[in-house]
Every structure is written in structure tokens, then in C-alpha cells.
Image (cartoon, rainbow, N blue to C red; front, side):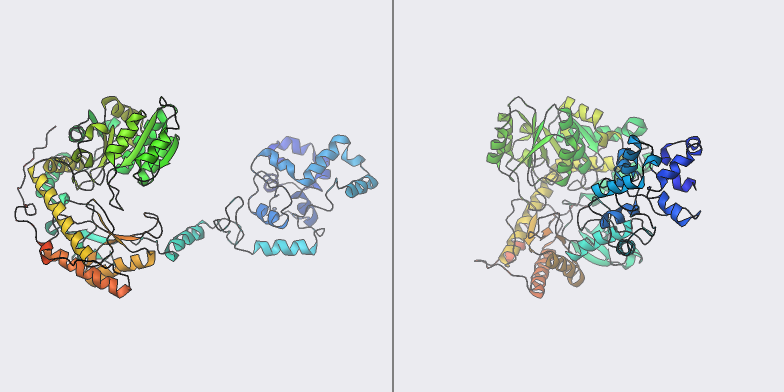
Length: 609
């Protein structure tokens, strides 16, 4: 009998016994090997070449298993457990045969009788390449080895990893097909490469080819930035950031627990807590991380917690809810009555949390904060509000819609971003002293990551303080005026403006391909960047252009923008909406009492804790 290491490594039995056992069991193993799908091939070919195939029922079988099962789908599937190897019909026969009597004692007549009764699988194992395999089986098997569409087992139809020519898994082809799927349904995202102009906000340079020199970029006007107030280019924010870099360097140097907590982190956390009138604040690398870390930690810590989530909530909140492992209920978007119906199903003493947003970023809708909080309190639920698209823009000091509506004390936990209206980067939560301390102590998304760079904390801190003051109040008035005027101009021109009570102006298209073309045409023909919003950011059929005016868009910019949209709509054959009243030219004129765009030295904010 011929045994080799390459053979034994493929056999689920031989791979589990010692070499000493094999050396002393040659005769017995020889008898069994006649029915082993690996050894039978080796014995038949009488060659010392390693066996290239693998038993379809072996614990480590990979490629040939799929081929074998494709031909013989009635045979049991293999898995990676040791017991699975024993399900091979040929090995099972040998095992049962040996338990009743020595293998050598079985006579030919006994074997033939067993064949007739269906006890013994007739013939040699069809996996082997012996002459006992029928020509039909051989042909099928050989064809399958050349079929690139043959896929790994236990995968959904149409969503499987193809095989390479040598029987491996062709991961790269799988990835390529997934990208092609996005291209085919017009939801593939091509990033627009920009170099924003701090001296002439909201303009930028655009690059079709990012390898060209930066000065050769095309000048464009941006109409979709989340830098809603232009604070990223505020001269005082820039100066404070540059000074911090000069004094303290770039990075934080570690996690918050290991040498990474800066004086400015503490000052910023104190500031966001004060902004929302809470006991404490906690900053994160982004608001996605803040939402995920807070919700996942809080709701996994609360025993038997139930989460009630608005159907329109952001992906970061959905991720946190999912990661918490807590039971969840989804109430209809902005529907407090439905929320109450769901809350009524649960014991009033069972821990509960209601998660929702103030401003929903794609529709521009504003949540009914008062009504949701009233229902939540009625059923002993904690409230979690995401004010990401509201902080800096609403309220006397820019704390968001809850501040504007006098509801700060009704919201238990507030999350916000430092990367939109505040013009920096990062996210935060604010809440009660011990709630924040618990998140700080348990949230992996906070603990196991490098801390925010001090310069970033200073930029955010400076921006918040400016927007809390008189200059910020003036910017908010100007911002709301620009939004109101632009919405009136777009609506009066017959463009399909969707209703929105916030600063976000959605322009309905309803088709992913046309939406992408409209955005591209605005950029290529008119030098205007307005982002197309397609699935999965919005539902299919709700594709739109998302317009985000700033206080720094001038009257001339607004008129050019409306004309460019009308030209694009006409070129693509998109429908307009009949309007009873056309806009008046005066709608583009800003009131003289509104402050101009900020200038250097407009505010002097000391960066102190």
C-alpha cells in the first residue's frame, strides 16, 4: 500500500491518527482503502503522484466537494465537522461492515446480497478517477471542472463567489461584479474631486483628473456643502487652528486613556454640554461613531431594553441600534401616534429608548420633537435626539431645533456634529453626568480609537463660540433669508421643489440615471456642483438633487443657479410644475439689515476652558 503525507492530509481518518498507527495497520488499511474515495484512486493509478482531488466528505474538502455535489445532489453535504466525514456512503459501508464481522470474512455472495438490498453503494466511489466510473459521470465531472460559473456552496443564488481555473475562489471577479451592479442601476458613486477655496467660499476648483496641478482645476460654485455657515473658512477659526498647530503639533498622541486627552478636548466637551444645557458632553471622531457608540452601549447596558426608532433615522443610529442587540420597534416617520401604539404594548417599567432626529438630511423634514418627547415620557422612555443637521443653524445660540422650540430639557440625550455648521470635524453627545460617564467607560467606539487632534478640537470650540454669539445670530438670520428667497425662486420657476420646513431644499427627479445626468450636466456645462442623491441614501423613485444654500451665496449666484437648473431640466426633458405666481425679482434682494459675510477680525474668541 502506498501512503504519503499528501494523501494522509486529505483523508479525514488518516489525518487524525499517528504515523505509528499507520505503520502497524497496513494490511487492514489496505482492505479499507479499496472503498476510500481518495485511496482507491491512488491504488488504481499505481502512481506516487499526490492525489489532487479531495474526498467530498472529508473535513477539509474544498473544491471537488462542490463538483461532486453538483453531479450527485442526492448525497449528503459535507461540512467542516469531524462527524461529517463519516457521512460518506462508502466509508459508512466499511464502518458498518467491520463492526459486524472482519472485512476479510465477507464473501462475494454476501456482498452481492447487500448490493441488492441497497446496503452497499454499488461500484467504487464515483469521486475517484478509476475505470469503474461510468463515462456519463466522468463527462459531467470534467465539464464541471471547466465551468467558471460553478460557485461555492451555501450561497444565495446569483450572489456567489465564482471559481478560478485552478478551483480556487475568484474574489476579485466577485468584487468587480458588485461594482458593476451599482454602475448598471445608476447608483455608482463617482466622487467629485475638489479643492475648496477658503478665500472665496462657496467656490472651489474641480478636477476631472486629480493628477493635474491644483492650479489647473476648473472654478465652480458649490451648492450642496454641509458646511452650512461657511465656518471652515472663518478667519478666527483658521487663526486659532494654525496657532494650535504651532504650539501643540498635529496629532493627539494616543487614545483618550493613554496620553491622548488634551486640554482642548475637555474645553470642547464642557462647551457642548453648556450649549445643550446638559451636565456633561463627550466628543468622538465623527457623529456616526457617536451615534453608534452611544446607542449600542446604552441599550446593551440597560436590561431588557426596547428601542423605538423613527423609520427615517440615519444609518449611524440604525447601526447603533443593531449593534446593541436590544429589541427594536420602528414607528412611522414623524408619527407620534404610531409611536404611542407601539409603546403601549410594553410594561411601563421595562427600560425603553426613543430615537429620532430633528432635521432629516435628505428630505429636510423636521421632527415633531414636543409630541415625541411627551409620548416617550408618558411611557417612561429615554429620548435620544440627533441634531446633526440643526446645530449651529437653529435656536438663539445655535443649539438646534430643540432650543428653538424651548424643548432642550425634554431631550435626555443629544447628539451633534462638529463637521457641518460648525465647519470642523468630529461628533459629540451631551446628557446627564452619569449617563455620559457610563458611555465614556464602556463604549468601544470611544475607548479604542486615537483621540481627536487638538487643532480640530480648537477649531470646533472657536466656531461654536462664534455661532453662540451675536455674529452667529446674524449669520443664522442671513442664512434663513437666503434659503427662503432661493426656495421661492425655484418654486416660482416651475422646478419640482419638495416641501421642506428646514434649510435643505430637495429637488425631485425620481430616476437614478436622470438624477446623475442632471448633476453631471450642471457641473460640466454650468460649473455648478449640486449633488445627486440616489439609492440607498433615498428610496428608489425618490432620487433628488439636494440643495444646501449658505449665507455666503450671493444674489448673482442664486440667479445663475436657477437659470442653470431650468436649462438642465429642458435638456434632459424633465417635467416642470405649473405655478400660479411667478417669482418677483425682489425675491433675490437681501434685507440691508442682514450682516455681510464675515471678514477677518469679526470676532475675537479666547480659547479657554
